[in-house]
Image 1 (spheres, each protein chain N blue to C red):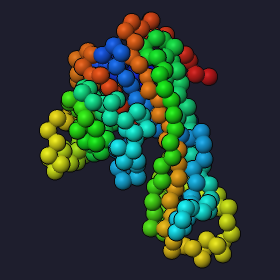
Image 2: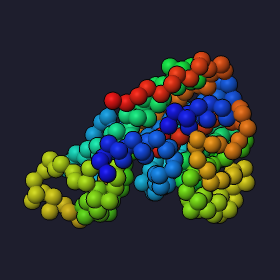
Image 3: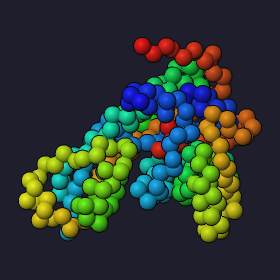
Image 4: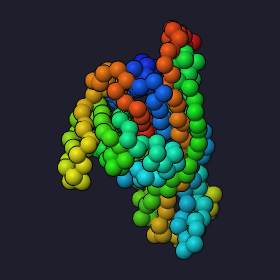
Length: 119
Length: 149
């Protein structure tokens, strides 16, 4: 398949073809959050982490947020995210498998949506 | 990609914030040797053509939803991030397997220097860009996708 076709197909289906990236190769959540504006950006907010992978960022911002939802097309990544949440004892985070094009949430359900290394 | 951004706009409360953060393919990444104090540049690492195309498509999608009145740009920025490796071989393996970068660094030091320091710790230093966008209350009509030639 020509490279241009691969590019077109993969960008046309956001979140469907790209596997979750390894968390160990990415900045730490508090480093990313600091650059974006720090904890005030998240504090007291309803947060959606789109393309959450193994929950690295969702779990990182959870202590500041009211509620965090993480969604990712990779069921294995979601299973890992749930394990990580249990391990860390984080209770205000929920993870679900799904695609960005059809989010299973009502209108205006969030104050903050994070696309970290997803788009 | 635009349909995902429209869906994000739907679930965001008016005035809510969208954070778009991703590796910045507009600047080079660097392979660096860790020294007792600081780092020594050993090579440059370009982004793969496929990822460059993906990043441009993402940029176009953001531009379109801003133009269509779904979001307003609030703030942009960039920071640098270091990915650590135990030695030079580990860094090379990473490049061989990683999809974002081309599979070989362009070295700026000679082979003898690379060999002499091959067991040192290395990093790839790369840029991460981010943008904060505000969800607007009443989007204008979404413009139809333009045919690509």
